[in-house]
Image (tube, rainbow over all chains, first blue to last red; front, side, top):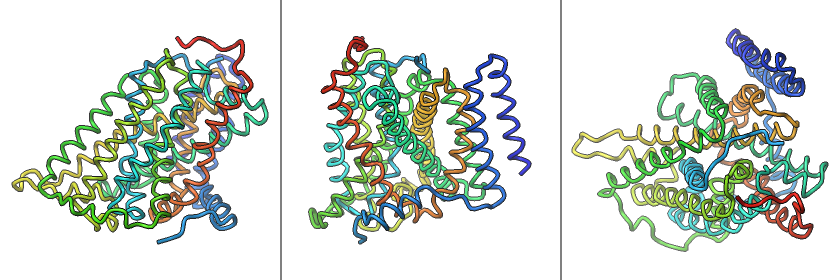
Length: 73
Length: 368
């Protein structure tokens, strides 16, 4: 948890001041959105909260629901 | 507006293609359980099948000189449909990048550094890729030949060192597999090592001369495919039918090298070569993902997104599959099916629509 906070504090410190100084607000907004997603996922991982796998969802939709799959050996 | 100022030459594109395909050498294992001793045929058939699609990528790069995929989609399909298609493409890039980061993590966890925490391996690797991407596509292109030479050196040297243990009767019998398994093998090979070259849609726009892009792309693809073929032939000739029971056939075959009890445990060579080549492949994926997202958001630079994206990809890589078996089963089915429209449908379709609508019209620049 401490590592996560340290890493994300470092990422913010490295990226955000330059964007604010240059008044690149669109870049700053995009950075904040991606940063929030990354931090949220990191927090869920550290706290052992299950993160849904997109590939599991695709497997369910494509192979189980639509029946698109190759026959098993 | 362009978010990347760097330029690459045709010969650099050739080496980038070759290194990118070489980075998938360990992924040939996905087909071994399905096509067994006929994997070499599937590698060649997959290559032949992908040639028209690679030509369509090059034709699009030439037609829309200087534009990347997101810009091309907007021009061909309109702003809304183009953005939807670009999101599909970004999802593919994001997922495939996480699979490749996971491959490196599994490589180290299973064979090289089993006691190191898995998440640490993923984070360090993603940070190295992020650093390379921050340096820009020109830097990656300038060193691409070194990656290719390293990969070729390892494959050729291990092939020579294993010649005395090769039994070419391991390739027999030919044509005994059911057709559906051959088709699945070709689908896997064309979708993973070759189809992933879709990533070059975001890179070919940086070519300083698109006139001979198709030749360079095909040349690179051929070099990469010959490497995959050499790996497959080596593994089958050395291990025979047992190759399908090992976690990694390449590692197992290299471990059999024993020259006068001096040259042994050469598997570290595969570890080094694959780390370097997957690093190169992941860096290209990462670059394409960062530039595509930045283009979608209308940013001036992709640099602010690099570190948050690295964080997302590490967590995706750590959680996307529960086990290596899960990884193989999903990749051999849903993994190759969901990406098929992007690989086999949209690039020829985009080219066709662009031709019918005479796009990019008056904006179309020269090929120099």
